Length: 69
Image (cartoon, rainbow, N blue to C red; front, top):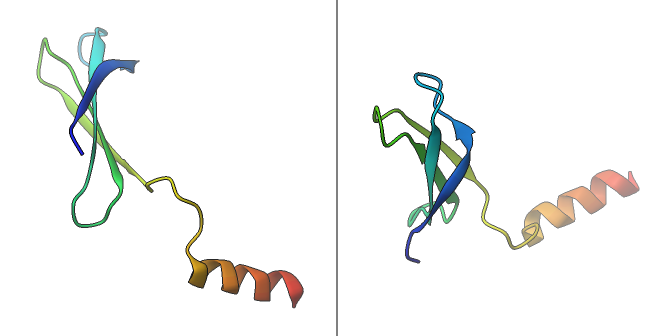
């Protein structure tokens, strides 16, 4: 998956300017990696999110057992 670069909704805590957001996928964990970076001062902030695709079958089975207990 190639990276996607867009304007971030965040502002830099150092100088208050809009940041650039890079969205790509971690090869190992298959999670989305979102990096917000300020072009002016170089401040970076990274967050990881679970890739879309729903609940795994093991987690779905456990949730069903908990719901029916």
